Length: 154
Image (spheres, helix red, strand yellow):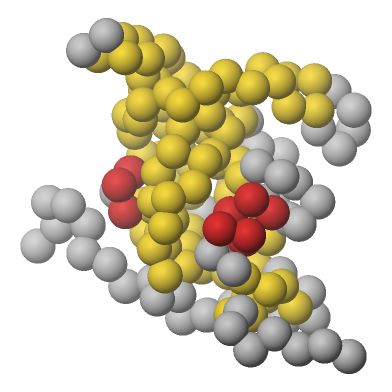
């Protein structure tokens, strides 16, 4: 059996933060079957800022207690995603930093309605490859909750 000593291990579920969007304490499900990461969003409204495409949306946090957070982000692209049930959906793609444990790196998220799903955030395989993370599906919450100072926080 080969081992890889330069890769960090994460569990099937981990705490993350999205500092550029002003969000901390998000539970993320690690989904190696999904290429792209997904963030639960509603009220998605495209707009233009300085000649660039942007979106304004409401991010939904928490599973038992629902919290809403208004966000704005530049649109990287628009993709057609085929879900696990075979349905195709057109989604906006944004790029923002994710914090997991002591790491912070930029990844792409598609914005989609996940209100019927248990986890509001999925981290896909592209994000894991970028950070050189290995998943042990027998474990959960291996890494410490990210502790970040958000812009404007005291």
